[in-house]
Length: 311
Image 1 (cartoon, rainbow, N blue to C red):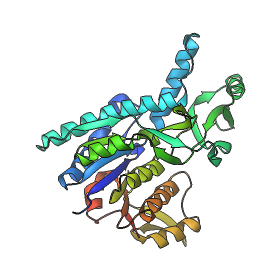
Image 2 (cartoon, one colour):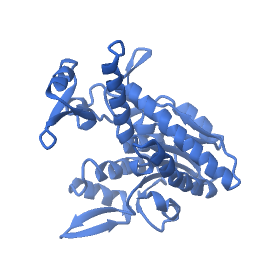
Image 3 (cartoon, rainbow, N blue to C red):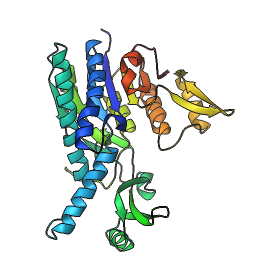
Image 4 (cartoon, rainbow, N blue to C red):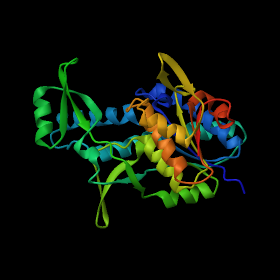
């Protein structure tokens, strides 16, 4: 039987920092997912939480200032809150869209914990900006807590910077797989998952955020999906070559690897997408990764648009 399991990674263009705007934006994501369901795919969705987790962290920090009895929320808790909030909007929009097409399919959000390695080099080289602009005094207090901050010259303030380690394992994978095998639709590992460290039988939240594209690839691999689809704001990945912008269409794994090695991709935007896609394709046989526009997911799965990577 043909493997029609797909993991879809939704980029930040599917969401918003504004509650009303986000509820409107997820409608487009819901249409894209419903198209895949109509094409008889079993779908697991993961998503970005870039602006949302920062918004939550800022709000919880302000709350602790207003009430000294309240402690600042750790990043792991902010990540969990973002998974629940975004999952709520997504699962309702998808359920409504499916029902409007005469499809009844349960949609569930799973709060997902992802193991990271405490010795990951990312912890020694934090790279993700989080939260609001701080004063020098506030930055000094963050440093006393062991957090890393950087001065923003353009804005004359300070920002907290946290690590972005690679995902090692997904703890709720059995639950996700069970639902997928039952042909239910699952939203999981939102924002790259809640990064946790294993401590004997317990799990401790890590002060980090995981790049969602790498978690999407890990999730797709562990589910043995046939396809990883990363939906963004562009039809294709592009590179600058000889002063011209070149759209990347059909790539072999070898071609993708060569482009990565030559440094064509921005390390904070396009590189994680193609690097994660390549790792997924190479980890199994008969796999395909597609990177394309959220609005064109239907054409992307049909091979009419998008950057496609296959072994």
